[in-house]
Length: 68
Image (cartoon, rainbow, N blue to C red; front, top):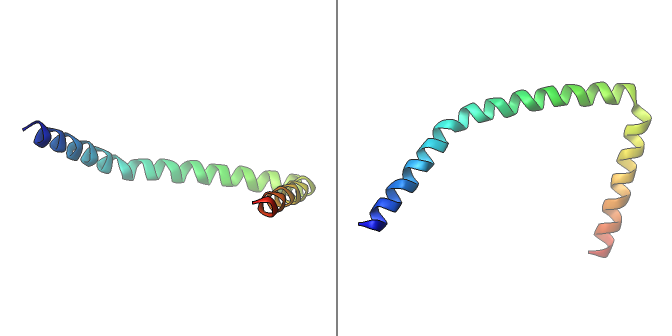
């Protein structure tokens, strides 16, 4: 009986989380849309910094990949 109760509890938790999922996806979409706008504004104001940052990240990734 204890196992059956545990399984029922897990199923209930999964159901609750599944019901909350659409709301969370909507929240994440809104957050990413706002963040994307900020990134675009920053890129337009500071294209040189973005290029230097991209180069630095690429350089670091290449070093890591070479030693992996």
